Figure 1 (cartoon, rainbow, N blue to C red):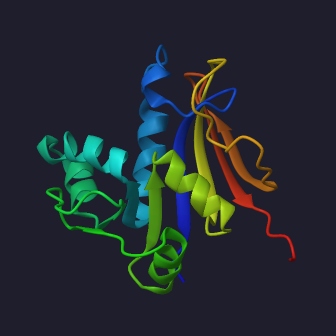
Figure 2: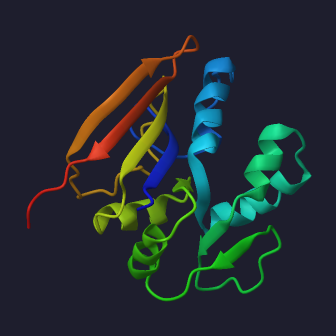
Length: 180
């Protein structure tokens, strides 16, 4: 069975607004983290906004990473998009939890959710996330869109943690499933 893995850039106080996470230089450790994710990826699951942002920039990128990233199948959670220019891609049909359950039963490697906070939050709410990989920046933003939905609690087991030389923390968690 395929795993759903959420990967996100966050502030130390849990805000997931990548455009506000400035002042920390990208380094080789971050490159390795993202290369490891790409090597493990069989597909991407993106919300409409993230898909449109990525589609506006990634197709013009070059190099090995960009070639592999662009070639991944993309599943897009959207009720408004009909045409997808950054291919291979398809809009998911029906309720997101049902569509993702079906994707998890397929083959082709793990499914990575990049950004797409509302998609990640809905999948966590339905117990469909298998891993959460965070690059936590050494800054507190004080306000903004939180990675974890306000009012929701999620028990997590720390799988790994590493401190990069630029102060970024690479954290990987597994949601703890509770008996219902």
